[in-house]
Length: 154
Image (tube, rainbow, N blue to C red):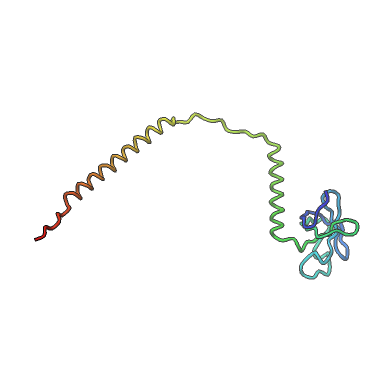
């Protein structure tokens, strides 16, 4: 599988050269990281920033005349690194789940039957409704006895 421009790859530094580094990529491919793509600041010595065997997250920015990927370290954003880390976690989780069988807990008999819970709820609802009716009746009777008769004009 050949990478496309903009793809993120994880590679290891194979060889450090005066103008950049040769990078080992997945699928037995190699790419080149030019000195100008190592950092946003000016780099004079590649050895100050990279070492052989170092693993890097790189972005494909093009291809050389032989079809090998040209790589960039400076164009990889923190968001790109986060996306790649998330992808790694997903792949790892898939492999773990693929090796496991799923064991669901057995359903247990509920301690209380649903009919009993519904009956209790109905009793509580009827008691609450009775309290509301008594309060309403009390309010209406108080209102009826405390209401002043309209003044009779004279």
